[in-house]
Every structure is written in structure tokens, then in C-alpha cells.
Image 1 (cartoon, rainbow, N blue to C red):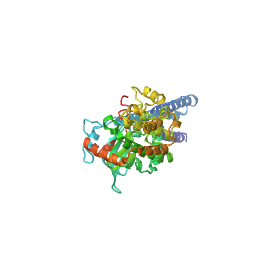
Image 2 (cartoon, rainbow, N blue to C red; image 1 turned 45 degrees about the vertical axis):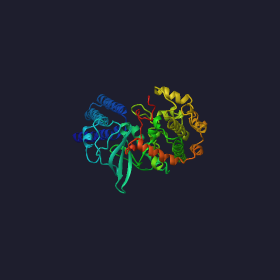
Image 3 (cartoon, one colour; image 1 turned 135 degrees about the horizontal axis):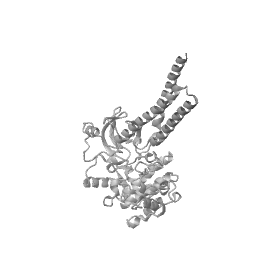
Image 4 (cartoon, rainbow, N blue to C red; image 1 turned 90 degrees about the vertical axis):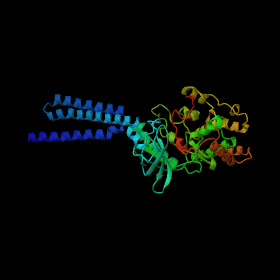
Length: 445
């Protein structure tokens, strides 16, 4: 019987310790960051070894536990080491462009990516180049700092969609990844409830291939970024008309409790020939909120951020009005109201220095328009328009200064643009440009 009891104790002890180690390695360790994981494993190992020493001193006859406890500690260390190597390999895979992906790019399903244009680490390709969720991938049409944009098709109804991906797993880990994923789907759901003719329609959101994605309306045309250069400015009536449309879209979003947080030319799509104006990316800049990307860049475009947003204060819809004011200033003059040669100087300028009068750069602009832009660029939210609906109304009243219809002017600009530049079928590419190379940023940063 003593031998049977000893054997039973050994089997039971080994089973309990194996169960403990398995649960820890399989369910606890993957949910914490690398540093927290090593700290937890170190503490558990130290506790097991301390228990071994105490058992050896106080109960030398308990040879089973004196053997099993250090064995469990060894299993934890070995399992943690293997898990760490696997996570390191996964990170290396995300930060490199594997040869197999470049070879797969030559498949008929997607156009070949030129070797001279390597894929950035932050914009991974869909692994099998064929599907993402239920959508069939046709080709990649753009990339951002945290993901890529694909042209896809819903096989159930044959509708073309733009699929925007975000590689959250390459930016976050452990508890931060869980929070970022939850926020992603919460913001996608909120944005999907916005039903307005001047807001891009969200169809679906999901996760596949370690990529969170949003399927949305595929827009033909291009963003406003090309019209922020002094050599290719839009006519003033067109700028006012676009501003009115964007303000109306923001008013609708604000009425639903949604703040955009990243209003800028790159997030406004236009089809000039058909008079289409669409605001994109509602809620995207809030997915990490106060978190930062691994490059240290706060999500959102600094030059377009309001003083309260830049300083980390509470943000409401009036922050979007400031960003719209910056966008109008740039579309009217080809310059940003605040520029600097460092991020610190730019932040100080936005928070403390008044924006220049838009007429110092465009003396021909009406005084009423200059006053409207100046009010939108006020440092204090209380000094701006009360809400986006008031700003929309003010812009609509300004339109009466020009006898021609803004839509006619838009069509004229579209015709001129078609002659001046070749068509850009992939212009939807840039609806997310959250990186230091984004032309929407201060170009000197």
C-alpha cells in the first residue's frame, strides 16, 4: 500500500502540475505582453523552486514533490522560451517582405508588384491573395501605415467593395491588442450607422489572416490631396461648395455622437465630373485613441489636429471644425496655416500662435470667406462655429457670392483636369495615410 500510495501521489501530482503549466502557457501567456510574460514566468519559477527547497527541508520524505516541482519549473521555462521564439519569428515575418509573397504577386489574381517598389512592413499583403472574409480580392489599390486597401468583390451579390485592412497584431500585443481589436469593431459599427449621401457607406467589418478589415463603398475618383498644391488649386466657388458638403457630413456624424478626428484632404474623396463628395475614415483615428504607433507617431495628421486634440484635452465635434478650417485654408492657398521644422515647434505653433489671415496669401478672396476660415481656426473651441450645421449654413450663404452654380464649376474643373493629367483608376488608394510620408502632413517634418 505505501508503494501504491506513493505512485498515486506521483501520478496525481504530475497531472496537476502538467495541467497548471498547460493552462498557463496556452491561455495566460499569449494574452500578456512580452515583458509581463517574462516577469510572470520568472515569479512562478522562483515560487516553484522555493517550494522545492521548503519541502526538502521540512518534509524530506516527500521525494515525489521534490522531483516534480523543479520539473514543472523547467517545463515553464522551456515552454516560455519556445513561445518567445515563436513570437519573435512572427514579428520578423511581419517586418519583412517574404520572397514567397513577392512570387505570389505574379499570380493572375493580382497584378505583379514591381521589385523596385518593396511592400512596406506595415502594409502586409493578404496571405493567399484570393480572399478576405467572404470577399474575393481582385487587387491591391493602396497602402497605409497600419494596413493596405484592396479592391474586392462580394461574391454573393457581385458588388465591388473597397476593403481597408489594419494589421493590429503588428502594432499591439497582449492586453493592448485585445483593447485595440475591440475598439476597431466598436468604431466600425458606429461608422456603419452613418447614413448620409456625403459619407462613404460601410458594408461590413471582420477579421481574417490576422488582419482586421472594413468593407466599404468603392469610390471612383480621387482625394483632395492633389488640389492642395498652389499650381492646381480648385476655383474658390468649388472649394466653398466642397466645404459645405463636408460640413453637412460632419453635422450628421456629430448628431449621431461620432467625431471624425482626422478631417484632411486625403480623407475627402471627390468625383468632379459627377459632383460627388465623400468623407471617409470616420473613427479610424480613434482606434488607438491616445496610443501611439511603433514609430512614435500619434494617429491623426498633426497639421490638421486642433489645439485641444494636440494637447490631449477632451475632443468633441468642434475639433473637426478646426480641421475643416485647416483643409479650407490649404485648398484656398496651397499652404498650411502652421508649419515648422520640428514636431515640437509645430505643436507649439498650433496651440499658441494665431493662424495667418488667408488673404495675406490670396488677397482676392472675399472678406466673408476669410473671416469664416479664421473663425474655424480659433484656438478656443468656444470661439468657433457652435456646430457643423452652423458652419454648413455659413458656407452655403457664401456660395451666393458667385452667380454660377458650384456644380457647373466642378464639371468645368473636371474637364480641365482630364486634359492636364492622365486618369488615375487607382486613386482610391489614399483614403488612409497615417504616416510621416503622408503629403497631408507638414512636408518639412
